[in-house]
Length: 120
Image 1 (cartoon, helix red, strand yellow):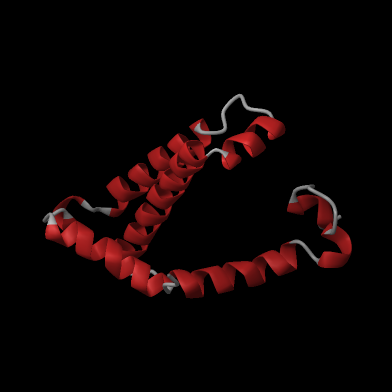
Image 2 (cartoon, rainbow, N blue to C red):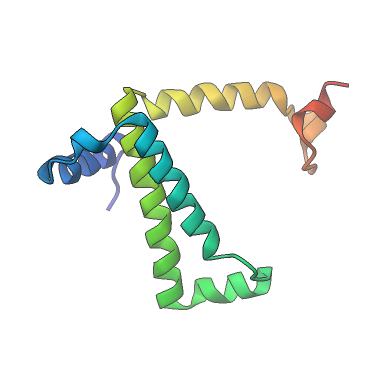
């Protein structure tokens, strides 16, 4: 099933609205929930080596748990976009253009250095 970002945002809004939760979805609270869910996603990988992560992703139960946390992060990000009136697609396109300037291919390719290293 392929869905657009807007389709997914509407799915999350319908879920929220069916439960009369919009009253609780303030930018502050939704961003806090997003951070908490991101922490739960990190917990799936905490103290695991790259090999252990690779193995976990091969196990259906562990993979599903990781995917569930990723979905929670996305749901709250879409909720935050909804409550702030943000077009995430436009925001991402704009941000990627800024990143193109910060990390020019000819200077950043193959390097994990922070952008300030490219301004010198």
